[in-house]
Image (cartoon, rainbow, N blue to C red):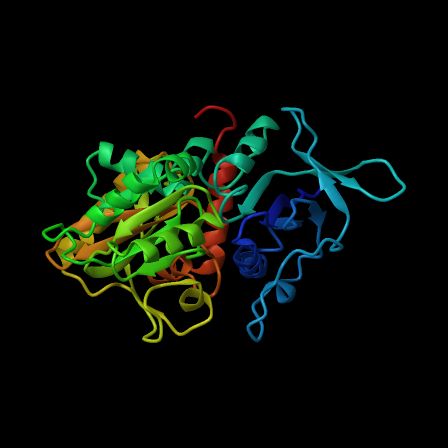
Length: 381
């Protein structure tokens, strides 16, 4: 009897977004954890300009070393392409001086991409078009959660509590700047739910705290304009949020393998390094910020957070996995802040740490994500 072949997994990382390096670090961690006896890995890097290349998949080359950030270089390996027909799930290898050669069937894709052109429904749509199974949310869930303004509108409409915010499109900023600045200043009006003039200005469709500015006074027009322009360097659409006095809590969510309700980890609380004003890029990946898992909260609050995380996962049409971020207000209010459909898997990332504390270690977590994706049908679900 012929030996059964291993499951072929295309691990896709890098990408065109400002979170390219974090995607590489995530991939290095995941590549170290995949069971080589069960899975055959095809390591696919996407360069910052968008070229797909076959890499050697060496995890050591994908780690942050001495503050140096990794990336997929243009000369990393052979170019790759997807065949555009819905009844095949393979990759084509393109070598100089030769025609395309089939690299073989791909059973499932693990798209470890963060930010636009990877976590926003674009690559998910590509996989849907070619009939390839993949880990994570589909087109709608990915797109809705990537756009922080759209997500807040969606969550509000379904009865979840979100903090005060203003969304700013490119057209509004160009044509209605005074009205926009008035709306932002109104977030700091005395008597609002935050009791503070502090706010955060961020790109609407980015993550890893890229492009975020903490503004001490949202009525300070010059400071707000500078912060919006800084965010617009990453995304023409901007979100301004009033600061919420409270604790930053996160929950990991996994799709139930049997089609039941999503499963939720024990919550984690983020403690930001004292040298940083907020949980920015450096605090997340280069400093000594830490987590308390499980978060030290009353049992009824923990249960409410977990129920809310599962409900939000379902409401936003997430699949596979997500990290749901909350603020637990000083008055006991639970504010739902963001949903990340492909949370970081770096050694310091909250998502794998929360699941490890909940009884699912890193290799088992990666295996579960792949098995869930393999069991999911392609097409409309």
